[in-house]
Length: 301
Ligand SMILES: [Zn+2]
Image (tube, rainbow, N blue to C red; front, side):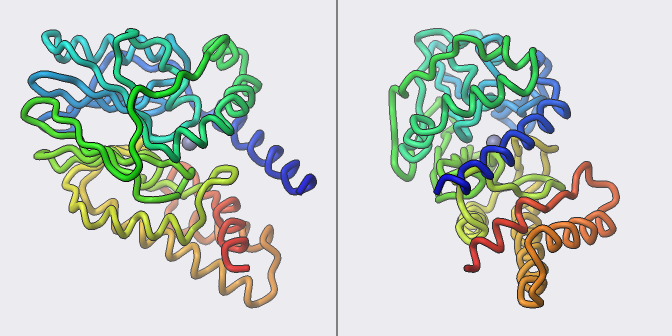
C-alpha cells in the first residue's frame, strides 16, 4: 500500500501545481446567462447561480472564503428579494467547496453523502495540497474549516426555488466518488461539474471513480436530455456535450486497451494516446491523457 499511495501523492501534487499555474483563483462578479433561471460566474471554477422566485441556489464556492463571499454577493445581486440561499458543491475539491465559510451563516448547505464522506476523508489533505501550489492559494485557504452540511441525500434531492426546480443528483463515481450533478427544470440546464466537460480530457483524481463508472454515469446523464450544459472548468455548451464526453472516454479507452494488448507500458501508451489527441484536436487547450490512460490500464486488470 505504501509505495502506491506515495506515487498517488506525487502525481496529485504535480497536477495541483500545474493547475495552480494555469488558473487564476480569484472569481469576479460578472455573470453570463446560461438559461432562463441560471447564471454563471465564469472562472476557476465556473460557479452557477440558479434563481427562483423565492430562493436561490449556488453551485460551487470558488477557492476559499474570499471567493465564496463574492459568489454569495453575486447571488444576492441577482435576486435581492430572495430570503433563502442554498449552496451545493459539484465535488469536494478546494476550488469547489472550500469557499463555504465566505457565505452567510444562514446559507443551507446541501450535498450527497458520498461526497461528504469523501470530504471528511480527503478534504483537509486537498486543502493542504492546494495551499502548497502557490502563496496566493495558501492565503486564500488559510484557516478554512469545512463544516458539515445541513442536509444530505443519497441519490437525489429536489429543491423548489419558486417556479424552478433544482434536482441535485448523485449518479455514481467519475472524476471523484461524490460528483454531484444539478439539473434545473424547466430550463433543462445541467450543471455538470467535471463529469461532462467541453473539449477537455477527463481526469480521475486520487481514489475517485474508474473509466467504467464514469461511462455509466454519462449514460445516466444522457437520460436527462439536457439542453444546456455548464461544466466547471470549460465553456458552456448544448446537450451534445454529453454524447461528446461519452465518445471521448470510449475513444481513449479503446486506444489505450489496444496498446495494452500489444504489451505497451501505461506511460508509453499515455504519450501515444495524448499525441493522437493533440493531432486530432489542435485547438484544445490541453490534450494530455496520461492520467486517464493509466486509469484505463488499472481498470482493465
Ligand atoms: Zn476537481
